[in-house]
Structures are given as C-alpha cells and as structure tokens.
Image 1 (spheres, rainbow, N blue to C red):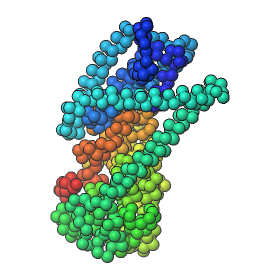
Image 2 (cartoon, one colour):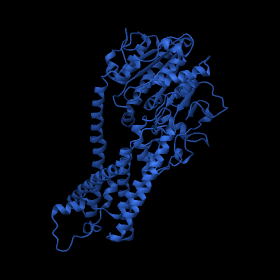
Image 3 (cartoon, rainbow, N blue to C red):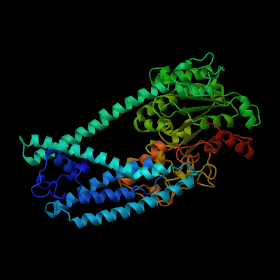
Image 4 (cartoon, one colour):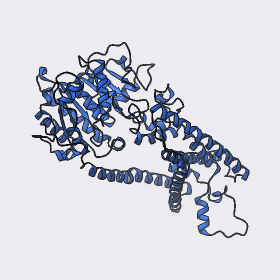
Length: 576
C-alpha cells in the first residue's frame, strides 16, 4: 500500500500542478498550503480509485453487509489510487516529460463518469448481494448500513491515503538527510529502502505482535468462563470428572464444553436403535500442562485411565485455535459407533479460529503432531487384536494440525482407519498436494486424486464423493469443503493470479458472476474470512449434517438404515 501511494511523488516544482493555482496576489498561509497538499488529488489516481471502488461491488463468496462493503470499497479505492498514480509516473518517465495540470473540463468529465460508473456498480452490487443471499437462504439485510456504505468507503479511502502520504513525508525527510552525504539519486533509493523496511517491520513486528498479544490476553480471560448449559461431568469417562488426571478448571472454556456435553448412551439409543455405551472424552487445556507435548501426554494418560483404548473406535481430534471441537463432528462419530468410542483433543491457543488461522499455524502444527504421536505410540504397543480402530479428524485449522502428523496418502492409509477433514485452509500441506496433483479434468472445487483410491473430496457429501463407480477400499480419507467457504479458498496468490476454482464452473452456492480481479478479489475473500460461519449451515465455513454422510462413508458402520441417518441429521442439526 505504501509503495502505491508514495508513487505519487512528482518533482517538488510540480507537486501541486494539478491543483488550481491561488488567485494572483492572494496570501497563502503555511497551514493553508499544508491543507491544500493534504487534500491534493491527481487525475490518474482518482481514475484508478473510482475504477477499483466500482469493481469492489462485484460478488465474492459470501453475502456482504453495508459496513463490510464500505470497508472493502475503501481499501480497493486506495489501492486503485496508488496504482493510478504509479502508472502515470511510469508513463511520464518513458515519455520523458513532466506532469501537466489537467484542464477543468477533464475534471468535469471525470466527475460525471465517476458518478455514472459508481452508481451502476452500486446498483449491480445490490443485485448480486440479493442473489447470494437467496442462494444461501440468508434473510438478514440492513438497509441503513447499505446506504451508509459509500460514506464508510470514503472514510477508509481517506485514512489509507493520509497514511500513505505520511509515510511519503517521512521518506522525503530521510532522503533529504541522506542527500547531505550522498548523491540525490543514491539518497532517494537508500531512503526508500530504509523507510519501506521500517514500515514493514513495524506492521509485521510491533503492530502485529502487539495486536496478537492483546487479543491473546483478552481471550485468555474469556477462557476462564464456562459455556451456558455446561456442567462438570459426574462420569469417570470424561476429563474433569471423578478420578480424572486433568483438573476441571484447567480445561478452558472449550475443553469444559467438550467434556461436559455430548450424547449419553440413552441419547444414542434413542436415535440408533441398538444397545449403546456412554462415550469416552479426554482433553487437556492450556492450563493443564506447560507445552503441547506435555498436554498431549496428559490427555492420553487420562484417555487410558478412562478406558479409551478399550473402545472399538478411537478418534484423535485437532482443535481450532481456541480449543473448540465442533460438536457435530464428535457427536456424529459417537452416534454412528453406538457409543463404543473414545475421543481425545488438546488446546493450543486462546485465539478464535479465524485469528488463529492467520497467526497460530505453528502452534496448530505442534499440537496436531504431538497429540497423534502420543496416541499412536500408546496404541501401537497394544496387541494387534486389542487395538481400537484409529480415526483422525479436524475442522478448519484443526485439519491443518491433523495433517501435520502424516507425510502423505500412504501414511494416512497405513496409520489410520479413516479420516474426515472439514473446511481445510488453502495452505494445508497435504490438501494442496492432493489438489495441485489432481487427476486431469477434475475441478479444483471437487478434485479427484489418484482415481479416489484413498483420498476423496466432496462439496456435498449427501449427493456424491467422486469418482463415481470406483472402488474405495481400505482406509478412507475424506475432505468436506463448501464451494463458498473462504477458509478453503483464501490465499495470498489471489492478489496476482487467477485460481482454477474461479475460472471453472462455479459451485452450487457461488454466483456465476464471480470473476477474478487483481488485488480486488483478494481483499473481497479476505473480508469474507471473519464472517465465514455467519451463514446458514451447509454454506461458508459452517459444517453440521455433512458430518453424518462424511463419517458414514469413512466408518462404514453396519446395520443402519436411511431412516436412522435422517434422524441423526435432524439431531445433529439441532446441536449448538
């Protein structure tokens, strides 16, 4: 951003050449001069700003409210302004001429064209947003915020513009100091390098680290609370319950919800009409031990104490950042196994999922590997005929952590009985390997890898898990991914290159009108991230009843009817 805005740098003598001159004889005070420079705009920059602001109304993956649309439009306009100024500067350099003052008629034509273009873009944007809401069944719509969005966009644009000009002012000051010891060109180049590096270090170091630290402290306080409806377990089969090696208070907010809730044997029998047991659940929170390896060892010790290794099915779950485990994921696993199941998980961060997704990847990697290795070590020492079936699962950043314990397709096949990953982030190592090396002709939104012999992908688990009519023997690894899930599709590569999932035919809940635009699409999908779960189930990053079909495919439980699965879906859909 700074490089784009500071590209507005013209020679000092013509710095304000496109601003009308003051009347002859009129006195110009220093403060008035500074104000004029502050609100000085170039015509090429304004053209770029208007173009990018108009493009920001094009559809992305999720519905956008007025406030969010205003922020996106403001950011895109600031980028467009910088690119417009940069393009003009490059053109003048090749043409070997100075900047010229635009005629008033040029500004008049620009203003009329800008009003028409932005008006049309705004109208089309509202049409596209209505279409997206209809695709997803979203009914909430705040008209007041829609009306306010242009003002929000203008405010955001000015803030970024002022920030860029402040950085440019610092650059000029540094370059002037250096010019006393070096030539002007060397001073300018060195000053630019120094200022750019300093800004980068401040943003990625001081500001980002400070923000993460503050957020971590804020959410650590939240972690001491207990969710409504969660009570300390009275069963010895749960961490935090009688005889547990893990203190209830150390489990954290999400850990207490994980062990204090979930179906009982009676609940399971009411849906799956056959004898059922109460499932085992083991967990260790951040306060339970000092590091991931210690927490994993403690959780596995408590799993063994509760008899988890004597169950027929054992599930290793990597949590999201805050330690959250999707109830739909684990509950479904327990229902389909008639309670003859044990699950184990550990917490590695206080931060919510979308923020952990951006800054806590290392912690997720360490936790996923430490937990699976600890479970597998204990499991592998059991007699072969006494080992439970070993399953792996994770949602969002949990899928990233879950993948890190494995080197590839063969490792997943050989060391698990089945795997379900939902909403995998685009940077997942194995997900990217499988998707990038998909079979020719298969789309990125639902790729086919090695003819689906072990790993499969589905955008709708209730209808298909391609390839059809192909054997799926042995271990089954399944990725659940909605076409409209920004967690799955967000990548820095969106800035400058068009991904296949946009170039190909759109998924069932993505508008055909979505196109890739350099810079613009990246910010649109980035803005979708915090709201990825704020849509109805079955869209965005909200996975619920998909787990019924997903786990049914991965576990292959015998004796269940279509009515049983329908009843289970109704139960899972009602789980908060």
